[in-house]
Length: 153
Image 1 (cartoon, rainbow, N blue to C red):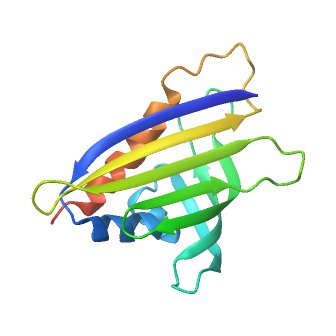
Image 2: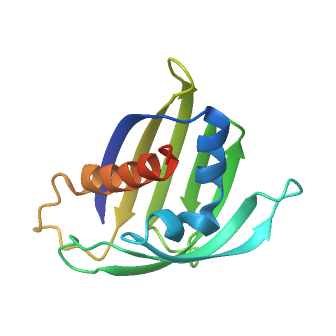
């Protein structure tokens, strides 16, 4: 098993509520980040209509071994402060993991500081292959796409 960690931070020119709406709607990730997120289908919604569980496919262009991944995730939303996305194991012995933590805080003016933390545990990468910087690259790609989607037209 190989651990991947990454983080990114930026200020978006949008309110925390607007940022939260974009990030909690996981079924729309492909609209603003088709480079990484290829498809998402919500399979369960909460009473407030936000996604609770979703199935999707992601594509990691710079992965040293695999590029296309299918997964099911749980979504936990804390309006308008945070969105947590956690991979659901395929079976009890499945030790692979993926966690994304989007944290939002008001910034000066009508802006929002967005912090993204990524943690993953994968089995498809041999131990001898270095992954330095891959986690930060993925986090940067996600965050850059989100801030571009939130930018005023």
